[in-house]
Length: 397
Image (cartoon, rainbow, N blue to C red; front, top):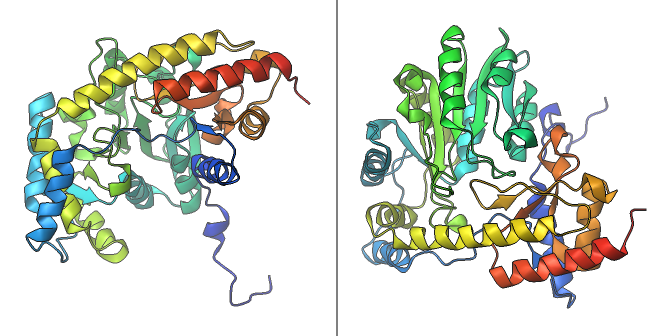
């Protein structure tokens, strides 16, 4: 191959993206043209960050917290994360194993970089967050999809997952509550997975628990931190974005095995130096302060969940199981006659409703679309009315 100054390494030919941001950009462009667009595509709470959290960041700036911090995060914030986990789950976490990072994706990046290389296999949920597969392919590792099936409530099957492990498997990624499906894996399946992993000591896990406080119907989140037998090979991803409506603050945390922690610290030094100081003080206020804003958001999401599920099941050719967590519905649109991505595109361009086609979340996503009910109830109702009119009048092709 003839090289020039802008020829990049092959790994960048394998990197993907998150199409929700492309849909957001197109929806924004249409709105700028004067179109009335209802955006159910992006997973972003429509609530403001709680005022006491904002005030904590402002106070930190006024108090002079303008400089670099340790690459792993300030100790008071790492201690606040440990306190929160003890308070909510009764699990003890050493603050020196907590890493503060600029958003949840950074934990994905670090974990997959640590284990991904040619010849390695990494298991990931499908349908699942698209960055999992993108980063696996970027490293040269082989992505192995673990199906999340509608008939299982979009939970993973421990037996099916365990059967996919080979001597080449280096890392398993799980996500519950799940994006894009809203599925919550039952505690019994997680118990079975952890027991089954005793036969595979060479495999590490990354548990993406970013939606752990957005769970409904009386269910309780089962954190993998509750299983001592896997703590020495477990990475937990979490953060503030969804729970505290802090998506733009870019603040996340992760728990690492002691054997990996210094590797991630060095990656931080090389890649992002540290998280900005005032945001870290806001994170302390979020965890240690009043939680009534979280309770309010969860209650509102629960109402919207009922609204969107009922509305989707009233659409021609559409069926939707009730999501158990997060703030997404993943309706089955296969009986409409449309392929998922052309339907999502037509809904945006012709009906003014932004949703995401299921194939953007993996090979098992065909026949589905994702809607976020993190928008207002009024906007959800408007979107459902438009979708009903569109599907009643328009045929594929």
